[in-house]
Image (cartoon, rainbow, N blue to C red; front, top):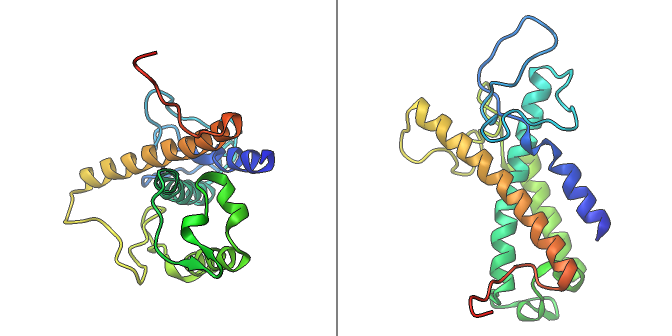
Length: 199
């Protein structure tokens, strides 16, 4: 479990690097302090110096990774809440009914190998061919994918920037949220803190 927590922390280090707007610089050392995602209260936050000598290509790569991690963690946090509350799909994985798979991190040890293989295969298909970055667009724009993705309606450019900033913040919060429930579950077996007003 310590390895999982360390990996999550390392993977989320780039979570606070700001997003890319169209910016041009003639110097090799680029400045990202005013990019989308450098928001109050932290502003530009790069504690590991991942962008110290970065060019626009590296920044865009880290931004795409940050968005992907944020999107995955938003789904993971909702899945964590759903399974911990006892909601299960009908059916089974081989001989293991879904109802017998516990919530939280213990589920990893109860899911049969066939189920783990299915999860890895789906992730691989989505990674290699399901989600396609639109050429010339901002990192994380998968509107070139075969799946229906993109904005609902026709938001203005200003509204799109606002939506992208909100997605960054929600993804960052979800990364911290998943880390929080995993750590808290290891501390006392309960991933959530419940307040009893009568105590």
